[in-house]
Image (cartoon, rainbow, N blue to C red; front, top):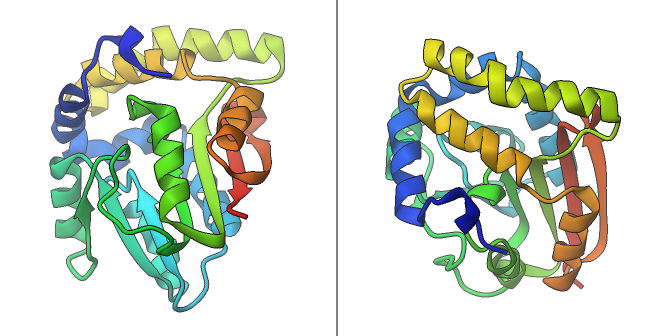
Length: 230
């Protein structure tokens, strides 16, 4: 599965995130009406980081998503393909390590991490299946994956309202708070074209993950998928 339908090459997507890095966390908070904070708390619970565990936080952006794992005493490795996002993260959290890396060619050895996680970034990697295989490769046997991603509301009337918000209300709000509002038009389109919950679960299974399950957050606006490496 590629994201070619959205007419963005990987370097273009990276550049787009570089452009929005400065106000990224604020913009997400406004556009999600504060729900992103709850979603990240659910990710932290699902990852269940423990002291001395090694956690890969892929698409870590400004490193906000990595903080709960560090507070739990885990050794967290934030990784992102946008240098602009990582620079902002390093400025805000100078004590944290960070790694620039491509989700389809992760710069890590096999069987390194106790848990791997990616929040709101998988749909921006051009080859989804390869990214899932890479996450599997770098995870220790018995380790776990947690994916938090925008998905598809399960109640049809709500889904219609949500899609109207994405395409009509989101761009004006983004213009008011983002340094690159056009980027959020792309993001809205990427959300609409993203696989639904069962389809993503199937892709995880095809990549080798077992005991794959998911649960919906905010009525299916977001889905939290989990799996284990045998």
